[in-house]
Length: 204
Image 1 (cartoon, helix red, strand yellow):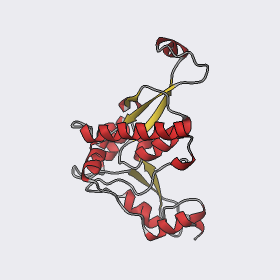
Image 2 (image 1 turned 120 degrees about the horizontal axis):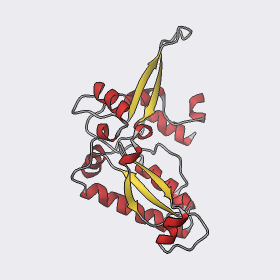
Image 3 (image 1 turned 90 degrees about the vertical axis):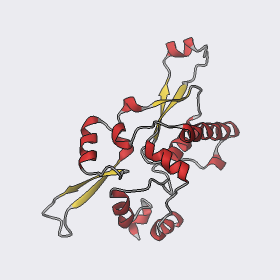
Image 4 (image 1 turned 120 degrees about the vertical axis):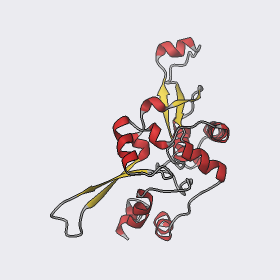
C-alpha cells in the first residue's frame, strides 16, 4: 500500500496506540530511525552496549520513577489527566481536527508523549562522551519504553576544562527520562508485537 513507502504504522496501529492503554509494554519498534548496530564502528558499538546496560540497570533498580503524567509539561499534564484514567497511560495525545471539506470525517493528529516531556525531568545517565551514531541507536532503543527519552547535552568549553577534556571536538553527556510505566514494562517483560501490516511495511 502507498503509506508503506513513508512509514510502518497503518491507521489501525495508530488508532490502537493512540488510545489509553493498560498493562505497560515495550513497543515492537522504536519511534526513531537509527543505524543498525552491525554498521557501527567497534568503539561505537561498545559504547552502545555499555549505555544500554546502564539504562536497563536503572530500569531494574528504580523504585520511585514518576508516572508519565508527572513528566509532562504542565499544560499537557492537565490534558493528559483529563483524558486518562488512573490505571491507564498513553504514548500519544490525540487531537481531532474538524474539517468540513473532509467527507470521511475529522482528522486525527497523534502527538508522541516524548515530545511533550518537561525538559527539566531529564537526569544524567552517563558523564562520558558517546559517539553520535551510538547515541542515535541508543535513543531509538530507549524510545521503545513508554514515557522514556534520551538527549545529548553538549559540554561548554568551561565544562570541558573542568573535566580535564582537552579535545577540540565536541564532548557530550547523556541524560534520560524514565517513567514508572517503563519500569513496569521492563520488569514484567511485556513487549507488544508488530501487526501484520507493520511487518509488511518493514519488508516493503
